[in-house]
Length: 206
Ligand SMILES: Nc1nc2c(ncn2[C@@H]2O[C@H](COP(=O)(O)OP(=O)(O)OP(=O)(O)O)[C@@H](O)[C@H]2O)c(=O)[nH]1
Ligand SMILES: [Mg+2]
Image (cartoon, rainbow, N blue to C red):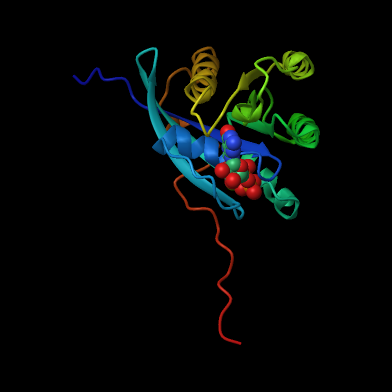
């Protein structure tokens, strides 16, 4: 008899303003790389990461969305049925924190109930003083039942912590749900996440 625990898949979506570092966080986490010249995401990209939490093998199915305003309307395609959302802002840019609040409002109205949320205050390496005011962001995170993590994709700080927290909370939630630890494909209404995101039509030949 095979007693190996079966892998669970959790769908995670990254949301936030353009250039706050969503792609950089994912690439640091999945491939341990960082580029100063990271290109803006078009529509979204999809990556996976396997990890083991409390002895349970987990696959994080990660949708890294484009933050530019022109892609905003695509949001529901990616956060629909998501188990968790990682909301990213640039610690040096107040407007990008406001954008996080707007995404949270949208998620609360449109996404799955009880979606797990975490907030990443990214680019912490750019802050010279050791202390910076996170009180507002922390109170806000508590208010919405999220956790706040200070991250730097550049230095690799806080990254494992935030993804591990999301995976751990998703696992706890699944354990306490009626589905228990059934492998993901047996879940009702599960979105198939192996498909590539739709690509923009190739423009050709005038
Ligand atoms: N100093 C510093 N720069 C960062 C960090 N994270 C990302 N960057 C830089 O910020 C710029 C934007 O990063 P991206 O990862 O492309 O940002 P994004 O949120 O994916 O942007 P969109 O795809 O347009 O939504 C790039 O030049 C990165 O090198 C960080 O932690 N520290
Ligand atoms: Mg990006």
